Length: 289
Image (tube, rainbow, N blue to C red; front, side, top):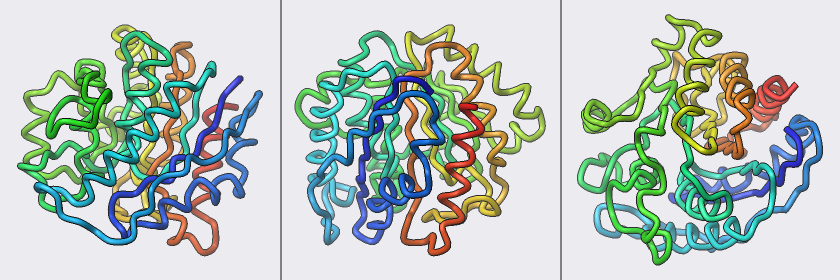
């Protein structure tokens, strides 16, 4: 990956998930920046408001915090001048502020490959947990509550016909129902395994390249099997191998339209021996070799 700016976004929307806020620092120490290769500028971590206790808010927890953090992410990334951007999370909920800000920076229509064991496609009406991290992709697609200020004015931040959700194996029933009527493409981990990542990767890359002006690859590391990465909040068996995820990223890179890589959901507090961080770094290195 050449000429990339790296920004740490240590966001988390439940107080007990503070380990995700430690993720950017631990991934850097594990060699993440050198794994990217090329010319990399480390922009440091965005300073976000502190979250020390959970506050219920209209079917969600900590929505005021999420809006404030998203506004900070938006304001930072809209001013960023870079050929490519790597975002080190933090939680998947960074996607809302990130898409809003980078949408202004890059212009045009974004496409997204969302690699995740979970849907993140609930709304306040369907969520079983009130956890914003399980609703953030739906919010980015214009589903759910109104967002803060100028971010809301850009809704939807991502049009669903330009979304591929890949690697799922733990969708809630309302999420499955929502995807049935969505123009987004849903590929479960079983489907990827059955077809083979080498076949799926170029097909996904072509679909997004044909429909989008630029592409975001969102890597929730729990898309990987726990045998490879265990330091996540919700480890779910049956996931991808690192080599399979790397093949997907590499195929997107080959289109010339991959502008953003988001790495999310690594919980540094659950990785005492550093093995999960090392696996994530190895995946990224393989993708961009």
